[in-house]
Image 1: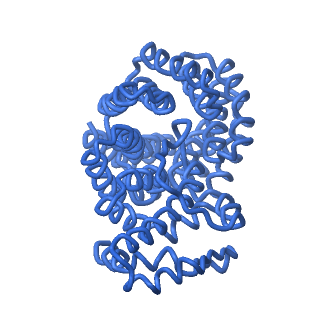
Image 2: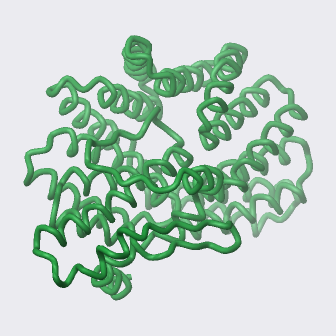
Image 3: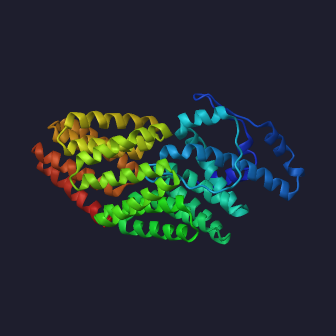
Amino acid sequence: MRQRTKRCRRALPGAPHRAFERANEGWIHRDRSLIEARAKAEEASKAERREVVARALGGWLALAEAAGPAFMECGGQILHGKAKRWRGEPELFARLAAQPATWFESERVNLLAGIGQASRAGPAELAWDLAVSSAWFFQMVAYQDWREAHELADAAARAAGDTRGRAALLVALAWVVFDRTPPAELAKLFAQARELFERIGDDPGTVEALLGEGEAWRLTSRLEQALACLERAQAVAVRTGAAAQEAAAVFGVAMLDREQGRADRALERLEGILPVWRDLGRRRWEALTVRVMALALVDQGELSAAEARLEQALALARELRDRQVRLMLLVDLGELRYQQGQLGAARTVLDQALRSARELGLTYERARILQTVAELHAAEGELGEALRSLTEAVRLFRLVG
């Protein structure tokens, strides 16, 4: 990765200006004025070269900003700065909205190099905005790469005295490491971000931090504290007219309803926000909302309806190429098949989930899946296999504390 990144950095003034094509998607992105600027770069002054690079990075930022929301699974909105964007042809952005994962995959190394370039050369706001805009995608496919980019952007924000940038990076960091960090530690990260946002009177940032804090407290079973955060987040979102943030807060309250045995109330809330996600084009959030609706239906014993909802959410996750949401749904579907008495089908689905969790490096999820696999082995009379799976599950649970 380092060698490829270095090559990319050396080519940085050219990479954003090149013809950008992906034949199978029919994407083409050219800007002749930038290509001409690159050709003259060697003759230009240092300030002019910096402007060329800033414009190139601004192009990546505009594209990452357009693609990023498709991958959000928590929070209401991605927090952006005011760094200058360069916006190309509208047709490209329309195609990008339809297949954001394809663009991110093709530009992943360039984005990392761009964050590094902006962190060193400035402005700091461009560096942290690029990092925050791409965080959800990297959380899905290249967690460690993003951590390195985050550290560079955070150092740049600190050096520039950019409080909002530091807070936005904290929120992004907490979500990226969410599946790998104890909930109490996550609550601290979100609280730090909230305090920074409150210090500068930033309502959207405060809401995002409260949403994360509420989810972290839910996972520690401190439900009253979680509800207080979510209700406060919803109130601010309503006051500021932030539809996505309001819907995210309602989603969090629905999760609390379900955990407290109020599946009917949870379903009512979730049905209410599903059109919001569709209207906003937030397809990952749509998949997650449908997933929780399925789980609430399981709580009510409506297994066939729950299966249909899980299949609906799985189709969305596959379309998005979202491996993490797909993993969650495979686990849910495997456990549902087990409840339905379809032991062979449950094993097949959970084997897929186990492979996916291993590929993603998610230790807790592997342990949880192995626990269910052990129950399946025991139900089929395979006690030796059950013991092996359970022993490995216990080992993995101990690893994550």
